[in-house]
Image 1 (cartoon, helix red, strand yellow):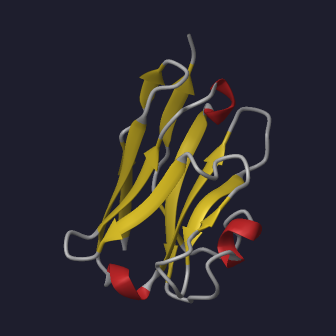
Image 2 (tube, one colour):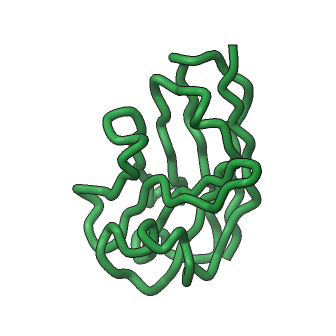
Length: 128
């Protein structure tokens, strides 16, 4: 199982970014997926997760209405579309997957604890 996150960068407040997580070595559609972030000096946070239902994904309150998680099982890709970015969104973002699938909120509510496979992070900086 391999995961590679990309798409981070420096943007101004209000702008958008799309993070991509390229996956390989497993059948993506059978796995729980999640995006997590960690800012300097802060604990890891579950940003968005999908478990047993692709619809009604879980989103942290701080990103609801601005971020959208999706996956393309045919391309083995996971995405996080981030709109209306704010300085407080600045963090290193990680994608993660696990073969044990629970509800959509399960892994995000646990800050990713229990997820077996993680990609290297991609840094998102939102600053004017």
